[in-house]
Image (cartoon, rainbow, N blue to C red):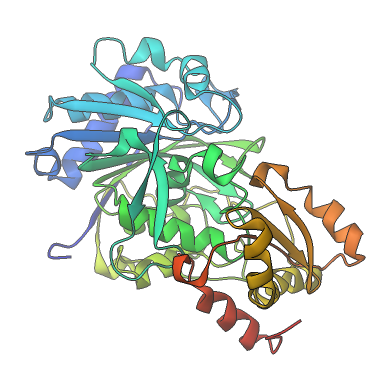
Length: 406
């Protein structure tokens, strides 16, 4: 990056009026600077708010789990100061149309008059987007055709804990762009050990946000849906996704450079060090400018409602081991199941399913093989020459554990 990233932090009372929240967010953006340049010459801008499910709950009048309508409106108002072109907003919400969540949080009213078009990222045609450079996981991903031609992305995230990634902020928020009809509900093909943190990096490389907004008026502790509200009274605005997220994680009382096995990263790798290694931005605050109010922490240590265990660690490693089983079975599978999904555990092929949504619960598969720590791999069956997944990732994890073959 030619210029140092900038992250701006401002205090903002969650109980303030919508107009005050807009003023504070715009003040944060002005402290950051460069907003006009972000949108100059752009032809299609996409806003990704956190509208993943209809977990509509309020604390002191603000959303707990979803991006608050006041913050989304303020971000749109900021953009419209500098950009009058095509502006789309939407999510691939899980189990329901995005419009249902959009209306439930009041965005239908808040955005009236701003000329913003709602897009349903689970609907319509899907097209492949290649990952520039060497991917972290997959060479390409399917997204809604609505995203073709987008030349600037804005991520509006909620400040909250996440059971699988430690925190949900702007990078994890992009995961909601991936369509459930392709990857399962809720994106179970990608939302899996080994795959999830690396998929986040790839999505961030395909769609690097030019503007990152974190709604910390009311945050959520413990988990991403149904967690505990915490009034934190803060807004973050940054021009780099990793720097913004690293700042948010520090405010939550955690180390954004820590990795798997250190709380809150108890499911798999912390995506931020992976993203930094792929050139998406810096974690170290000495490598970016932090501006705005002096908010050293939020007086609350955020955690996740899970604990590390040997069984869960074994299951993660065992997912990597099962890739050897898939490779051993691949030629036979191609004869009967090309394009379908193989389910492997304990060194055996358990099922072939037509869609990821047909996958049984993990507990049921573990009971079937008689091992609580069984790793379960779901793998689309494709010829070697059509493989888009980096299988060396699995080989490396299995080899480091000394379990290269089942």
